[in-house]
Amino acid sequence: MARVAGVGRGTASRVLNGSPQVSEAARAAVLEAVGVLGYVPNRAARSLVTRRTDTVALVVSEDGERLFGDPYFAATVRGIGERLGTTPFQLVLTMAGRARDRARVVDYLTDQHVDGALLLSLHADDDLADVLEARGLPTVCAGRPAQRRPACVVDADNHGGGFAAVAHLVDRGRRRLALITGPQDMSSGLDRLAGAREAWRAAGLDDADVRVVEGDYSERSGEAGMRALLSDGSPPPDGVFAAADLMATGALRVLREAGLRVPDDVALVGFDDAPVCRHTDPELTTVRQPVEEMGAVMADLLLARLEGREVAPETVLPTTLVVRAST
Image (cartoon, rainbow, N blue to C red; front, side, top):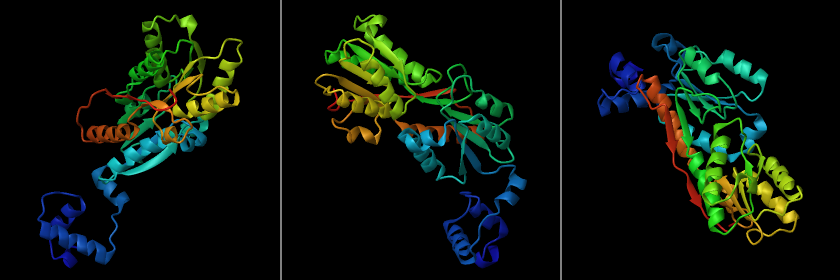
């Protein structure tokens, strides 16, 4: 390739490795030679020299139905992919939602296969981040398990978002409040509930005045939660906060089946600002979390850690209430 480009081997190598220490003329000549020769770098051979794989793992601790059915994951992957697309790193997707899948992923994630890992949707006391860090494999987590403090976490302001959702319902004059929470073995589910609780207490409501059922962020759990709230013998709520937009769409369907009008009879707020919010009837008021940005920040922090730079242990991005017709 150096011969075809008319440059030295060192110059050709610097161009291929993205070094800025070459002239534009030399870079253009080498890249032209790449096209002429159809050159593709041998990553295995390069890793023997650099001790790097140029590969990052994205580990999602959910099953395929959740991964491909929840727009949160698609937006996160998009943010990560666009950021890594400007680097030499390849992204490998792995799922660890079941015990056997997790064991396989743990066996695979070594420095022989990947340089670092991005972890999504960790539940309960999942120690995957700790296991990988102990191997010397840098990690960045989207949120954290409820009972762990990983080395590096990127999250949205779930507490502030939960507070904003319930405060908005109260501002709309709603007093018979109900919540369909996220999973209580995840920090996001716990924090959204804690923020909501702070808001209803600030409005003078007792905990006993607010009905709470747990969901898992899925549309199905939103339906089940709403059915439970309408069948417990109490008057129907006049304000509902569902801690994910998919749960809110499930709740909306059940409210319509029960003959309750949104927002006339029941005001409804979701969380995420997923595309579905603009396609429901009425359009859904929600709390926006910057999911794509979170993915990009995760990638940036992992790249920084791979370069040996210190990063903040926790980065929290703001959430914003988006008011639409459902309230």
